[in-house]
Length: 203
Image 1 (tube, helix red, strand yellow):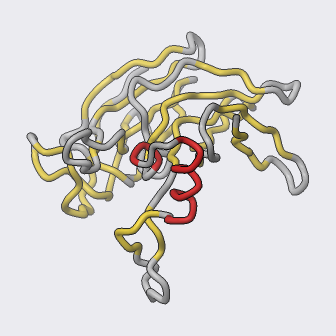
Image 2 (image 1 turned 180 degrees about the vertical axis):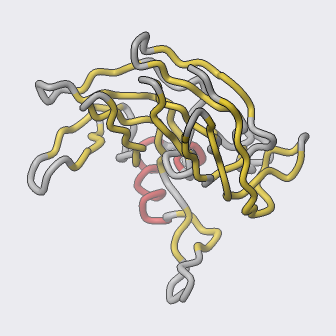
């Protein structure tokens, strides 16, 4: 049983027990004075040594992968895997597990905003294709209602996209930039875009 560590202050940590051999990196949202961690990712590509633009190589973290294989006798799931579970830190410094996301989603690939006591999640990446092993982008707009503690899909983006930016202003939900999909039939990433879209959002 591993521990997912959330750094709250310089010397205070609150562990989340989790049945994975290493710590996943989570997305953190503060709503109603409560810390909520959503989704996350285990594993990533290695940094390319000496790259002036901090480019990644196509190799995974070999040392980490080696020990994972020794522990689990299975290598592929830990090359890079996304999670959909959700936790909230209670006042008593204990974690409460909340309903999971409709789909696993990487912490660094989706954007979120808080609107009318709901967390709106835009885009992202989910588990890789089981055969091609290609990354799968998401185009759904997810809502987590903080009153009912339930997830729902409230819309779709014009294309699947990861590492986008989102904002809410004056009744409009905006998203811009990121890396979009190859096409309607291919959810793998391709072109980096800089366009801006918006839609009316009433909750």
